[in-house]
Length: 256
Image (cartoon, rainbow, N blue to C red; front, side, top):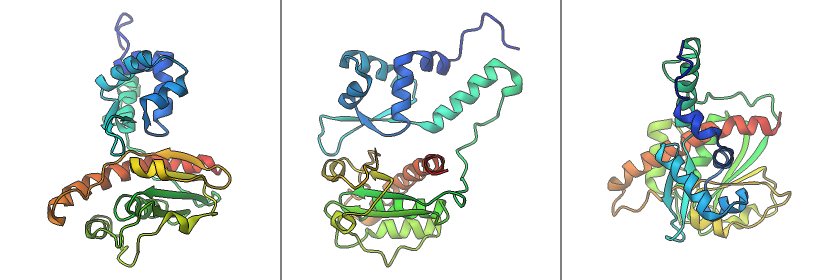
């Protein structure tokens, strides 16, 4: 048993603060800029920034510069790291709660749920959003109504997006073509998820006020050649796949 005078685990000390817990709760749902978090918290920016810095120093929260406005920073919560920290905290409380590794979020069975509609949006609909569309459809076993569009669609899918999904996930999207936001005007979605900062600003409102979520993910197609950019596509797909695994239980809870 742990000594009664042992300090609480770092995660417990961080999460126990009311403002930091609220920040963690909001960032568990979507990536946000600091000014948006200030509005959500209803607290001064210097106070919110201070607590964000503590969460960043702990490794629970990461920050990326906006591709839309380089002066902005998007904050993202690493849910896998949170899972590990929670497991370590349980072990510190009692040996019976020890786990060698915190299990990653499992795939969930959506077959008993009503179909949830999810729309992914990026600028070109050539890489990030079609990867997200394909991975969610794959992970959900076809039990989610999922689509992807772009605010300024490319003429074709990026070859690395097609190659990566085929070679690493066994998913064939070779016949798919980028689509414009206008092609889904009037359609009902439960979730609209933007994957790039520019598309977030261009995304219109949809009927029935779907839940808006933002994933701030850099464009992997920035290298001069397809061969040079492929590692970036692998990293992007891994990031999207992790986020989708965490999204699946949320979709289940949304439509029990």
